[in-house]
Length: 200
Image (tube, rainbow, N blue to C red; front, side):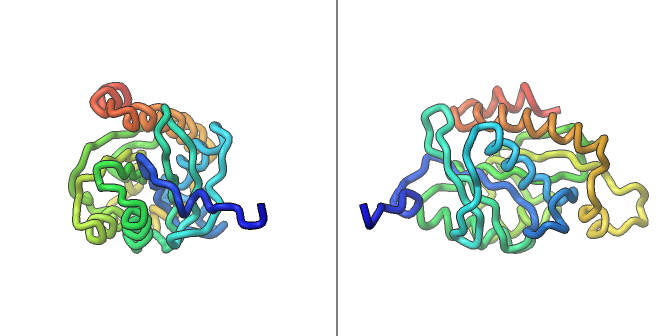
């Protein structure tokens, strides 16, 4: 066919999975890019790509337990992530309760994760912007530990932009694999099971 229908513009989705981070090679393996790293690993392990530009994001799609899922990596930089999430959610009419956000958390050690059904931004600017643009904090989230600042005087903005060590990257890969397993439970409406198994 000369005019192939664009599946991503005509589809409806059961869930949207958002990984937070900053675009560009220099940020690729920094702590603030944990959400990007997690969704990229999930895509790699499950044979799909998140590489099409739409809604100020790189997007991709797959099915998880029979549910159609849109994956989103906002390219707006972290503090404006909500613009991309809002645009995609509005276009596909996806309610906040079916938007799962994966992001970094300085209150958790590297290798730890925590799942929440909803909640405040916890001081995370990306989450704050998503709450603002969705006018809701009712979206589930998977928080991945990146470790606290090495000492109180260390600038937080500098800390989240530091790269992971090789040792930390090994721990991060393991926890991101677990996050993928948790994600599959959450998409299957088993968030309580995901919380009990993977929040630690």
